[in-house]
Amino acid sequence: MTHSLSCPRCGSQRITTRDYARKAGATVGTVAGAGGAAAAALGGAEAGAALGMVAGPVGSIVGSLAGALMGALFGGAAGCAAGSAVGEQIDEHVLSNFACLECRHTFSKPSAN
Image (cartoon, rainbow, N blue to C red; front, side, top):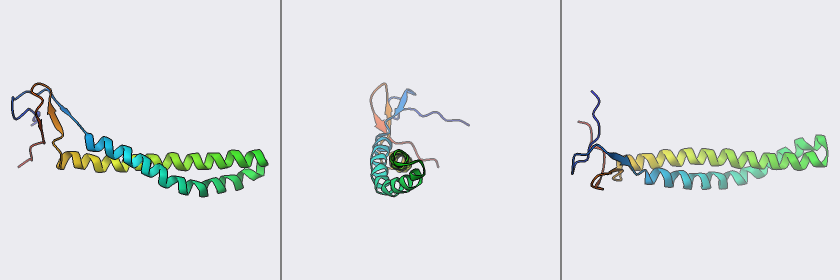
């Protein structure tokens, strides 16, 4: 049986989620992941430069930049996913994540018994 969520104050089924912690977690995770990956990207840049030396000095520069960019992108994406997952749990279990579009009441999802 599918039970649709309704506002406990006015009974409206026009409900939206606020997802504040998920959005904040994704942002913080992206920044932290990219920042952490920046340190690792230096190692990637060195490896890219070494591999790029086969193609000469230009290859070394391109390889270095590509290694650093890929490290930062992967780190940011991983951080975003992790931060979003943590934020989603906070939204679901700690914050009043639902908002009624009729009366503006905010509430948490009722627990299943």
